[in-house]
Length: 68
Image (tube, rainbow, N blue to C red; front, side, top):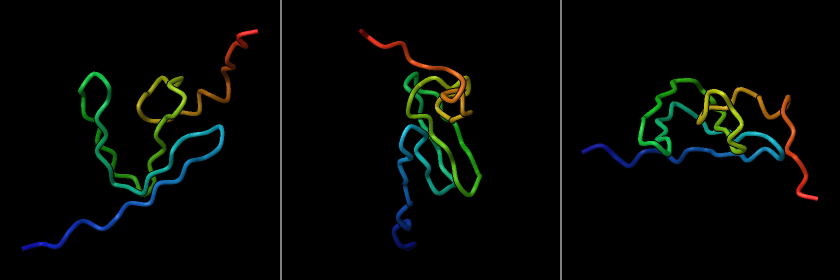
């Protein structure tokens, strides 16, 4: 019987993505599954990525409008 999976390291980057040690399988809000076999996977935290749920650094080019 195999042992438990080792814990994944997750790093939250200020004003950036969430970095997860891969490989990972992500479930998007619409229920679709995205598998990424990279060593480190950048998960979008701002929802501005064209490749959501993966980060494509779109947050660098787009700015949020201030509420005021």
